[in-house]
Amino acid sequence: MIKVHNTLSNKKEEFKPQKENFVSMYVCGVTPYDEVHLGHARAYVVFDIIKRHLLKRGYKVKHVQNFTNVDDKIIKRSLERNIKPNELAQTYIDDYFAQTDKLNILKAEIYPRVTQMIPEIISFVKELIDKKFAYEVDGDVYFSVAKFKDYGKLSKKKLDDLKAGARVGICNDKIAACDFALWKKTKENEPQEASWESPWGKGRPGWHIECSVMSSNLLGDTIDIHGGGQDLIFPHHENEIAQSEAKTGKPFVKYWIHNGFVTVNKEKMSKSLNNFFTLKTIFEKYDPRVVRYYLLTQHYSSPLDFSDAGLETAKNTLQGMDDAYLRLLSSTKESAKEITDKDLLDLQENFLQALDDDFNSEKALSYLHELKNTILKELFIAKLQRLVQLKKLYEDLAETSLGILLPKEQNNNDELQKLLKDRNEARKDKNWAESDRIRNIIDEKGYKIVDNKDGSSVLMKKI
Image (tube, rainbow, N blue to C red; front, side, top):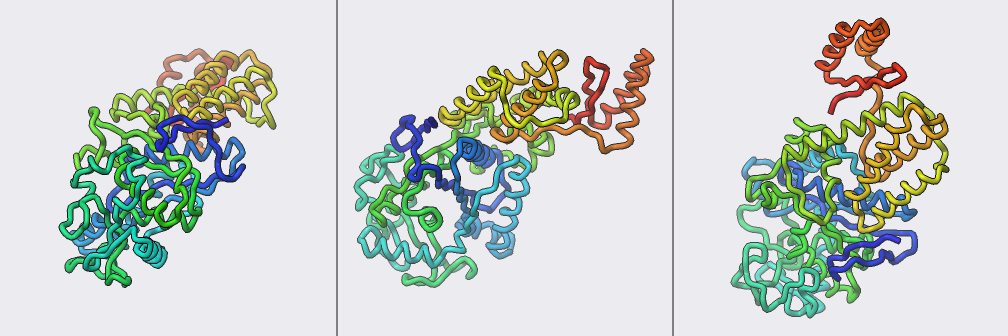
């Protein structure tokens, strides 16, 4: 039984999707006006783990993740660079895939873009106006928050306590300061490519309406899982609930899931504080496998404090895990059809139950380390059938469930293989000076030698 902490109820609940073996999942995507950073990576690795575990437990998952490819920030940046907004957005959409692919994140089934759904957005806004939940002021359309009696149920904010501010927006023409934009009138300096004809004049969608329209059109009026970072709880997800439920009269989402912030020196990583780190920059220093492992070391709802020390620890830990796996791989290339040994079945079930319990990757990793220790303990005493099962289980837990790509033996480099052969001969002759000299050459080329007790050696690329 899977249990999920639902932000809406602020409780851990048994997970029961609307359809028995089918899960609809919508995850808020990036606004592509700059390079993807570690904060983005945490969210998408978190929901990747959720998706992988749902698939492992036998569910079919329809996963939608949007791109907000028209937005104030995109327009501002495109004007600064004197290029079209869609060209700027495409540049950073390409960067998103280039960087997140390195993290081994499963692709969503659909990646809708706001600009692909303008007619549906206009129709949605018109219906809200017809139902008296929205009103127009000189080409702008606003949602009347006071008309939606459950406003604040996700964020636990009371309408009377909300004050106008940077995230809410201030406009003298609005009925109330808390009312938010559904449609924005085109301003004089804005490019024509970022505006569309509507019943209220030329303009473009507001931020919140986009996700309601894309999710309802692609997944239905009520979806099973909706999520993103904690910073989206208010106002974005709160406003999505208001406009969606005002239109349909149905519950918008069954389970709201939000990941914790990435912090730097205990402050939230953000572009406004100029303390964010792009994935491209991080990958120049750390292998993406290390970054993914690092992101799994804390429960998704807890803050994760970014530091080089944390990444170095993750790097050294993962190197040790790679070491154990490659020793095992050098002992058997066979694959088991199934796990039959009781202790391994118990460990597998403990691992899966850790993920059943609100997708606890931190606890799941502890069972992966337990398996690693078992491998090192039994490597040269266990029978082949046992080694084959150990290999299958490690691959299932590490790569299939946690998405940690496994290392490969470096067998396709003739120069390295000759060096390894020469070193093995030196070891056989007990020429330790020559053996160490060759090891240093291999080390300088960025590879590590894993020596097995049986005298064999394996090359692995250092991370």
